[in-house]
Image 1 (cartoon, helix red, strand yellow):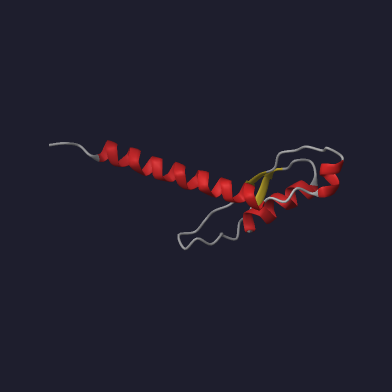
Image 2: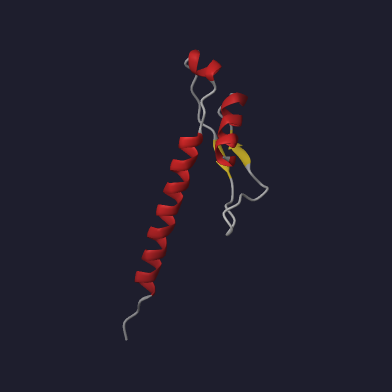
Length: 83
């Protein structure tokens, strides 16, 4: 008997990784850098937590888990995820 569970798990993992890369690419494409901060060459990284429901909508618990230190960057990240 051939055990296909390892192959199935790898296939699911590849599909999931592809899915998360696509979500990341779409969020990055939707990101609008705050002009005032860009002019001043400010930098930062915002980490956002969100859940995509089976129907493709976002759950209500979208939130910043690591702030960039700039509320404008954080809000831009949240807006990009919502788009």
